[in-house]
Image (tube, rainbow, N blue to C red; front, top):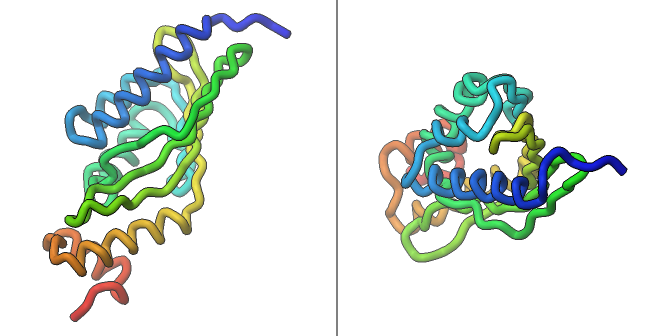
Length: 172
């Protein structure tokens, strides 16, 4: 078994920086641009629906419209279930929830995903692979939308998005 180039402490600190950054970006306290700084210039990001994204600008071309606009803009936090560190290979695997904003009654709408991060040193990752059940995410968005509609907390942008994507969910 080969020794890792990085200590468990360095890997844990890099993960905690990643975890804090995504939660700050989701909450609006930080920026998704900060997220890009966690990666090497030649990063490869595997996003299940978007495919393989190369380089920071490749990630940004997906992230900016996906996360800055509805429904991505309503994913406000990523609570952790667990994470494990493979010190030998410099790989971190985390199970998180994608939790949407409160639709107006204190209810929680979330779906899980797995992120696999390959560490490259200097606090940066060279690869991220996200794995999730696409149907679960689509069902989450529909359920959140139905609840927001019932509560009357839907804004015009959200209604237009639902009318275009899930017209069957929008009452006349």
